[in-house]
Length: 402
Ligand code: ATP
Ligand code: MG
Image (tube, rainbow, N blue to C red):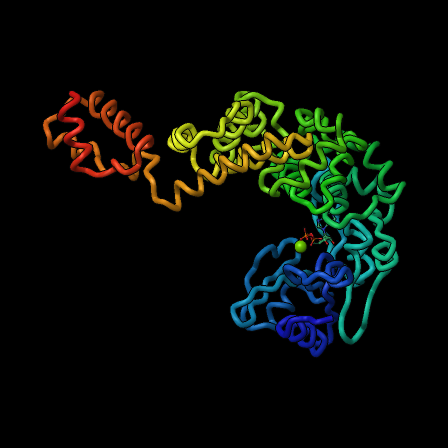
């Protein structure tokens, strides 16, 4: 294992001071899977105050949960005291945490066996729940009594499904049945946390695992709108696999009209830009584009170019799966026309029109509506004849036509 120097240093310092220190959780799992970990969590029997005494630069991140951030060379590392979770309320978070002396106890509060492995250079692996074996067998298995663990914290069910889609692992039978039994408890988790897991799932490499949401029933409790995906599932998965990951969500809700989509995305507390983009995409998904340069440029003046391309990508993918190569070719051509317009620097929006509202005021047009209408007329003119996008010509044209 190639553990970064500062992490080795932190564990060494803990040991020099008579404590234990291990890397734990996602980073150990990722190592065993052959991925490079995103971040390193360190777990120790040292109490937060001990950690603060040992290291010169620390930040009290979540001191009440036992987490101290140790700063080494301007990099932050979270060091957390072994803990057992106290009583859980509302299927969400423990009421309180109790610090522990035993690494086994810390591992036992973690969600899945693959996430409950600790490692240090001197002590090797601590793998109380045989996580390495489950990783070898590509299995996601709850630590201890899965049913009890999902009742404690219902988000773990979504994490399980999300990990399954990220890693291509199956969910072990008992764990899976416990998700089925407890699916409705996901309602008790804040929509932001559930949504974040859902979005990670949607962007996963093994998107074919999406139907775990159906098989467990989880989707019914936070996103019943995607039910249509599960009929014609194979075809829909082909399309989802073909699409860029950031477009998948829009395809999943492509059955909705603009209003329905807005309601759903607001309920999921997504940001305004995503909601706006979704509405534009849905509006044009049903639009029958034609392969015509003029028409394409007109659409470029109406739709943000990046979104226009995204819409074409979705339509292309759907046509491809339906084996409609004529339509595919059409979307390809439109895509090329967009690129050509941009490459040739041809005007397709008021932003690059050679004449502005101020120019029109200067030649004596003062009425606001007339200015607006004139600019639109000029834009239509240069969309048809790109060479005419020069100020002198356009102002004289307006002079003659008003
Ligand atoms: P990711 O790659 O998404 O970061 P991760 O496993 O590192 O995956 P984190 O949310 O960073 O996930 O959590 C770090 C570790 O904390 C997990 O590996 C697991 O041991 C533990 N953990 C996280 N969330 C829970 C939870 N809801 N219940 C129990 N243990 C959890
Ligand atoms: Mg992590």
